[in-house]
Length: 510
Image 1: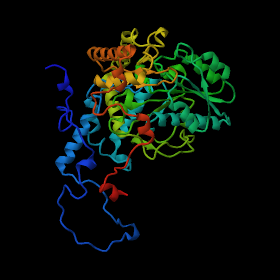
Image 2: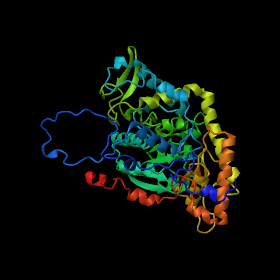
Image 3: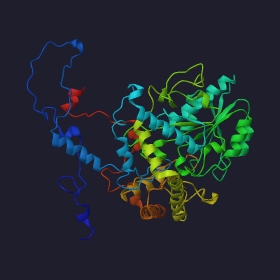
Image 4: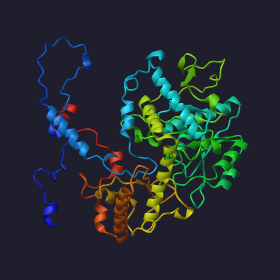
């Protein structure tokens, strides 16, 4: 059959074969019906007084089959790592080994409670202690705080430790320097902690301008927050020199470790003079973005900051494993700045991360970084002649390839390329970030994608980019094959419609 009108003909249902059109749950159900038959119950006197509901709640009633089909159909319209390549730059959306999930669901890990007596959770504490050891070993640092929940939370933990160290020596420094190539949460974290934030410019090749940083150092600078590898996908090769300069000026070095996936097993941040660094367990050690639950962002500390690390943490004693939760003036916990959370961290993420580390081993973790970097460079060089690659001349990239929209036809932008990729069956890459590159397109292929998968993505991106360079007008209205056409994301974010308004449900809900 040809690709004429038949391919785009409307259907009575709105469905297109297995691409099912799904209405809102309020349109499917009715507030006058219920999916469950309940016996009439005698009504007693209400104790709600004036708080009693005077009109129906306005929720739709659905049967079990209707409910299951609704959410199953919605799930088919979602994109996930189990469906295909997820090229989000700076997010490390890689395959999550199912072994890790099996371990996280074992009794004793999945079903424990944070208020259980310590002697009933010795296995879990032992796992946390083992993970602490490997995180310190892999980073070359002195200690680790396990409780921070994710990257930005870890950043705050590190900055608060720096503040505590400065206060302990009576040093009231108030400035944190943040390079242009750092993650956007870095300046936000420093500001949240009460510091004044000042930018450090980048060189034309996308790395920190060491001369400008050196010129700004002084007695008011508490430290520098630097992302390595940075958001341009480049390794900050002058970090050791930067650390020595900052330390000589009396400050501390915070390293954003969100991109640790690119250097794990290859580089120890402690050897580069880093004082604090968070590690996104849910990125470097599988379970991308939490895997349906909280993330986890442990922070490793140098010897200088270890006394100020937050509570709680696990220690091994002659009697077993102890959970240190209180400061003690007689030992090395007396200077802890406090705690980041009410309890101890995210047990599921700890279990997944340790499972990932132990199943890979030292050589496997090194290969993780090597393959991630290899895949990114393959994408970069394969598309270098198609899309503008602003830092291609700076040498090999690390784990992510950075492109811009500089060579597209007039009137076409990164957004058009991203929407065109949806029609090709791919989730778009990260767009308009980092901000130092106009119309940025940041691609992180990760180490778990095969050459065949990358070739398919490269071919699709090249095709869409060529259409944008040729000024193909149909690209301006892409996607055409998604459940919904191009949306106004800005309007949706600023003015979301969160309430269903249609009689009679709307009247009941008001």
